[in-house]
Length: 315
Image 1: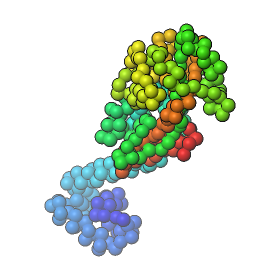
Image 2: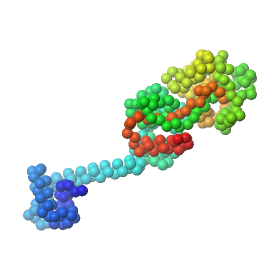
Image 3: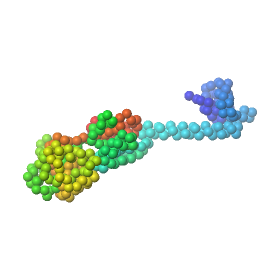
Image 4: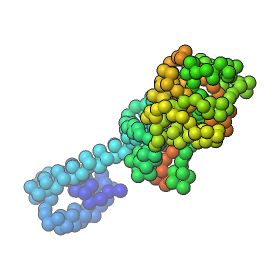
């Protein structure tokens, strides 16, 4: 639908009221009346009607320059919005604890960027508590975490994690539990997920020394809860900040750690540890992809969620 500015610009291009009226499918008197109203509104004369063909006055030149600037802005806006809607450009911010950023997100991001290479992805890493506050305050779009308050967030289940006990080979308890031992290769091959695989109770290790993440991390809370449910308070040798550090410390012989099988899948094998499947009920936990309730979700974010669910094959 045309407006007065379109009418003026068409007259400028054609240098003729009659031809402009034909192009715009309006009568010449209606076009002339519209231009006069426009000139009256701004208190200027846009066209010198005494010349043939019609020309611009000095004020008219400024007026047409302004119309062209407006058209350029409008066209640029339409192009940018089209790019965003068609996922040719855009920006999203995803977040997670260091372990999740290092071992869970990469598979999703690689797949996502193959489809939507024009979307910029920003990664925010911190502990779980801080990241949920970031999500609530809309500083990040998405968070992969373990538990979300359903009154504040919506979430999709993404992938199951099974907590594996990583025990330095030098510990004497390994001799007694030899028949239950697994290797890193066994874990990578999914032996611990098979029905016939035997496991142990965490209570068997109540007298041993542990490596547990420091407070503020979800894995700290979860490890302490597992020990409490097993009936003991763990003796902790050191509190690292990251799961990969905890894992490496166990492999160096510093103590027992509780490690997600997903981390073992992605890590180099080492002969300095043996592994045990845990039979404790809460040794299974689920990673979820969460976002703030009722927040506007861009198409780029929607596409990321869809890609994540496709990558981990769990709806």
